[in-house]
Image (cartoon, rainbow, N blue to C red; front, side, top):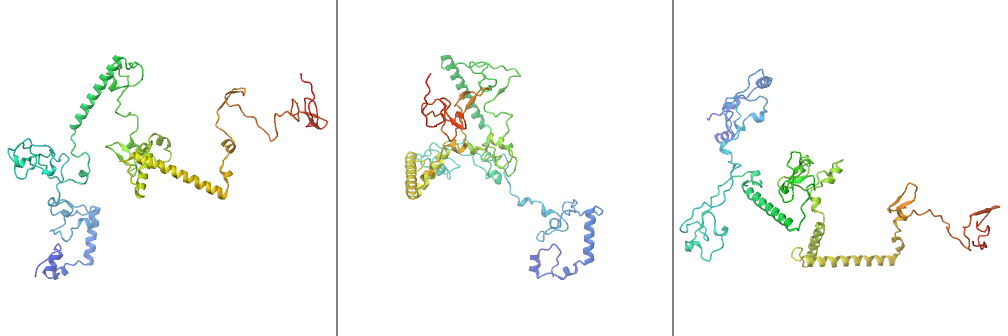
Length: 436
């Protein structure tokens, strides 16, 4: 009968005929389990020496949980070890390094005749005819063996990780940015020469020396511009933000906050949304989408939605291919919609009435105030603006009937009211005073 130990795989036991009797003899009693538990406590307390790894010879931390320190049944071992927790070199995948990337370009070597496996169009090794960037030849290199193109550099087979596959800067050559810098310098030099020529021809006026406190560094060498290069002079660069300004990614440091894209330097959403006490900061920067949805962007989106709805109704119109046609359809639709709405309102008013309730009074009567600007002096006279309207009562004021020069009620005698000009106590009396 085969002999087994505690590290023997279960599959081997089943193939050999089951569990042997030797295993039954090695079963621990209750006292042995208690002794083993006390030994583990002493190891944790530091009074007993720790277990030694049989493979590396190092001490095993006694505070490691048992489900980590105990090797599984399918990994046999001759004693306590943590080898099953370490990565196995034969199971690891070789990931490409940071500086490894797909090589592009040509080797510079040209063949004299077409070779098997080369491109049938240009005769270069490294790509097929469907991937060839050259113009399709009338007579291909496979049949002519002439003008064979240079072979492509064989791209290595790289094993990229999750981050490397999604890295937009992977494979970028920083030296390629030098061409952009050189082109920008040439453009700025041509712009400077053109402006200098315009100043000489009199088309532009030379800027004043003290026009602004800050001078841009790229305009310092322009014609007519003098900049004091003293250390006290503050020179700012146009294509850089002011150093005192807060960067976008520092507005909201919450991990679950708005996403900031470092490549495009954009934060689409408002970083101060839902943050109390940040109203002033939100007025300075409300996200890139705030700018994207201003101006004619909303009208363009409405036109696109209108085009989609029109296509669903069977109208053949496209927002990009036929913008003029779409605008005309949209204008006619809005006019018909407004006309239909007015006709429907007129029918309701004719049927049920109530037109007088729709005619709202002026804001002066509703709000009892106006926004007319009036400026007064210290004495109360109007300097600028509208004259202050006097408070009127429900009686007629400044009315002089019957040739009277005073109003009714300006005279009082023996309990009767009258006119002061002629002292008549009848309201309908005619004034008989002599005009002076």
